[in-house]
Structures are given as C-alpha cells and as structure tokens.
Length: 80
Image 1 (cartoon, rainbow, N blue to C red):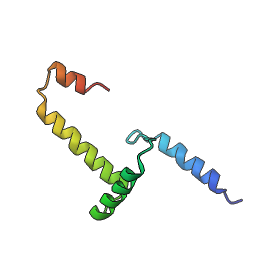
Image 2 (tube, one colour):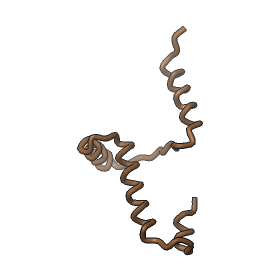
Image 3 (spheres, rainbow, N blue to C red):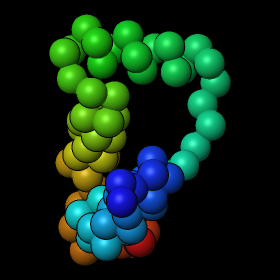
Image 4 (tube, rainbow, N blue to C red):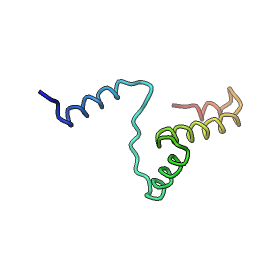
C-alpha cells in the first residue's frame, strides 16, 4: 500500500533528527526580512538556507578574527 504524504513527511523528519550535521531552526521573521531573504537568495542564485548559512558563517568569522585566543572574551564567545 502506498504511503500517505503525512507518513512520508514523518519519515523524512525522523531521518533529519538523526543528522548531527544540521539542527532545525524555528523562527518567525518580520515580513520585510522574509522578502529580503528571498530577493538576496534569488539574486545570488542559491537557496535561502545556503544564503543564511553563508551570512552567519561570514559574520561569525569576522568576530572570531577580532578575538585573541585563550582570553576571557574568546572563551565567552565560544560558549555553547
């Protein structure tokens, strides 16, 4: 018997939960920010996920470059 859409989606979500390389991010954004994200991703020719990943990694690296390793500021920033 064929699986329902709900069953396929439940299986997909279960597989994603086991993926240690990714974490689900559930947020609400202002509508203007959603439109901006869509426009920027389309202009760059990448997905919204890839755009956000790139922007976050670039911002994180910029902060890290300003910090000295083994300082209180470094340790505070690197807390998980």
